[in-house]
Length: 273
Image (cartoon, rainbow, N blue to C red; front, side, top):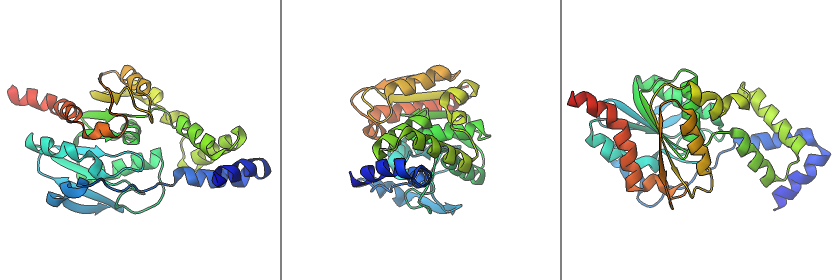
């Protein structure tokens, strides 16, 4: 409460300084603690570091890259590892900068996308990507700027970073003028307008098959957002769940099965032929 009161007052007195502080706070990440047993998937993993990021790898074969969301960690997508290994894939997961066991304390959608590209460049050819939440938006942005993959699965993906800034601004109590200044500062630092990060600007240009999985009861990213992305993406399917929200959807067996089957669809057809 005191933070909100402080920012609200400072917005009127010193909008420039307030916007600088708010822009830094907007990019500051918060590391979350793994759930009990979550890190057990790392027992059989091969660990490495890429550009300050912790990377984990399992198995051999075509690479499936797992991408966590904002304030998330690689092990959150652990339920996908065993079924993908069983189908002959190499599974790679990583902690983006500012997350998990990686370096840094700050990030943003373009910086997150750059992390994905750096890992992909080091690994070589990526067959498929499964991404959660902001990881989906960052993957979309990375695909728009040269990342290559054959297929993708987005679980609970957001579409508009301006919405996050609006919610962030309301939580801090900053006025519209300061929020506009924050947006300008972020765009100047990141080198790209937020309008170029929008799903509606990127999705129609995408050529690879996509599966969007979204829960009707998601309180963090409304279901309508995932549905909109699926509608705008030329070759996309939408799977709808209920009662799982934004986080529990990751551990749901039916969601895992849907994601893995979609990843494996083309490979299964090739093997059958």
